[in-house]
Length: 116
Image (cartoon, rainbow, N blue to C red; front, side):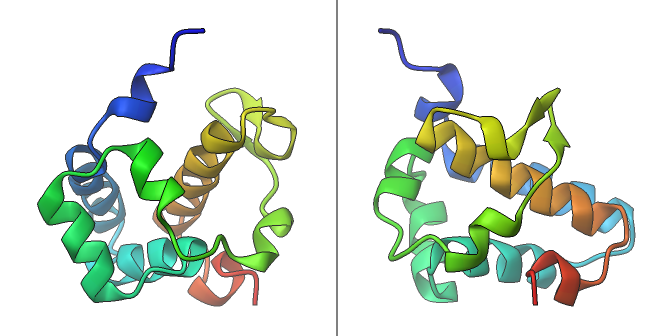
């Protein structure tokens, strides 16, 4: 079966779009990084290494230390699909990240985004 194109897309290629989306709404790059690190278990240094290496999404998520245990609390629709119903585990992780960035751009408080 052919892999979805996003799986082989460089995370570093999409990252600036996450930051831009957040900054257009008055949020910060630091908040985007906080969300990514919360979801994946990466620290800032390891996140930067993946950005510098232009790691693709598949390897970015395969190598993450640990997906946050509260990930099941991320619900809702992104790109026309309910994130909690996406069957492919990698696509679900990517859509979780998309959902969190959307919440940030919509002005949701960071504590709620991080399911605190």
